[in-house]
Length: 193
Image (cartoon, rainbow, N blue to C red):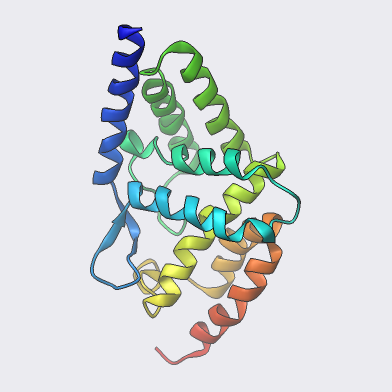
């Protein structure tokens, strides 16, 4: 039992490093960029609050678990903003290796379970994963809207990019949420900058 606890603590200590990974999105108060640990917590809360808007019923416990671990690979891979300039195929290789290493710190049964949940999120084929992916995309949009575009100007984001890179994923799992955000997004892009 001691070895199991030692392995679990090693994983949890490693997970603490997620708090040092800065993201492209700022906090709603504009004071600083959020870190990936804060993002993971915040989208888990988003999921709890917005679950009723999922296009199909979801198991919110599973969704929250996915969201709490979905970005853990950023400990090794860093944050790669959806509007950033990076090679998705290269990032997939890096993230897969990170998942193997980080989840591998856990006892074997937990490592398999966490990795399966992470893989499910990445594949986004189940109702739970589709909704989780949607919510992962919603929170940065809200943060950017609350900060007068936040980092959209920095990344030269267009309305079309938001629709194709974000809207498609949100609509797949929670179309009502995207509909609610779309009016605010359109209004922001129509304002003179």
